[in-house]
Length: 437
Ligand code: DLL
Image (cartoon, rainbow, N blue to C red; front, side, top):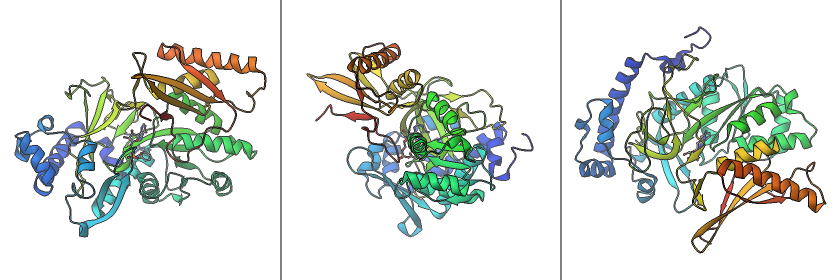
């Protein structure tokens, strides 16, 4: 560990493997006991698998325990999975998802401290310090992004600008006037900021901004390249989910080669999404997480649906906590078009490779006679726009070819005039699913 990377708050990131394992084993035993004793749902699910907290002796034993899935949170809505009485719960967050009831998550004072610790370590990992001015443009509210990043930046001692999402012109004015050095928001919202700054005659590369802490949605390496070039910053990927705590479950370091999981707090496993059996390191599967320190709402073997792999090679930043590869998709993101599995991230890669910049796009799915169809809508920039049909046809053909090259089937592409796709200040809505309409 180099003198420059050492920070007492980040010390667990550098623990010797054996020490980390000991800590994880002790914390896992405690959390399994807490879940079993305090939450009837866990007692029932452990009993149905014939396991008790005593069945856990070493970390490998975790594979004997049942999984928890999002439906379990919905079925016990709102407070059924809480392990603490409301008198000890100091905060609730909720995530709406696309269908049905939201899922509700709870924090004790201690849980908020743990979350803040993970977020401070995340910001340090992105190269931030108390000398930074950090603008939080994730939404504040029931979404965990705003308040989570806020607590981390404050805990770090940075100067925090709690802008929340939206009012993009004002965001840009603050970036410029305050000399902001770090911004935390969704990558798609930052792309929108670059676009708006351009319209305001501001070149982001000339601003003091140097770090972006981007997450809450998948984004491709091509998109990283685009934002880093267009804004003159280093763009870091941060991962998290409400069920586990919010942002700060895993984050990149200066090497930008996968995200370090704060595994003293969140224990990761990767399983085959079909067989639910563990897969070897390096093989892609579904990320499953057990919270080791969450008192109000322990999550035991939570199936995130996010697809990734564990990277075991030592990271040159010196951190010993393991890394997961960039999360480009979820198992439930995939759609099948003429027998071919397609992920939205593949479409984004194709559009970026052909357009050389992130054009706004949406994937529209429809269904005819139980067959799924996909149409990719891509927005032209004012420079690309033309009233000559032949020119638009040529552009359409180019994008269709670029997509075909990646997904191996011809895709229907429709070019739209500038500013016709709605911009989001939070998670971008890339897929419009009309298959059940
Ligand atoms: O998105 C928490 C968060 C806020 C993370 C700010 C990072 C920054 P949820 O709204 O519960 O929580 O959504 C969680 O978003 O299961 C992933 O599918 C996706 N996701 C989050 N971060 C990333 C990322 C927040 N870096 C769901 N890359 C997760 C890809 C991500 N997908």
